[in-house]
Image (cartoon, rainbow, N blue to C red; front, side):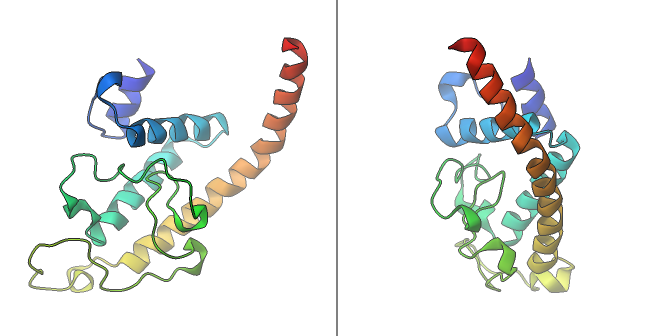
Length: 159
């Protein structure tokens, strides 16, 4: 029931457990862990939409996979370069707010107008993402010490 609710709210393709990729499961695990750290689902959904928008502006969506937005989930190298939910490696430290302009992962023909001429700007979306990500980090930093204490306390009960 919880899994189906997450799939619906995050607009994910519905797979049975046997058909799920490791990346898909890593994404679901990340969402559950963030909820355990008291990050609101509303903020996670906002972040999710910003990440997907940013990846669309960078044409990551053109690689042909139905789960293109989750295919990077799982790898843990260079975590400061990765988006929180999709775990996509941006190729630079996110706090630097430096997107390589014109970055395009697609093989398709270029559009008639540049994205910024159409009202889309990857730097603007990245700025919105970083602002929300900072708020989420602040929320988590309050919860982490409490989780550590609860884990230590719970460990005494199981030993």
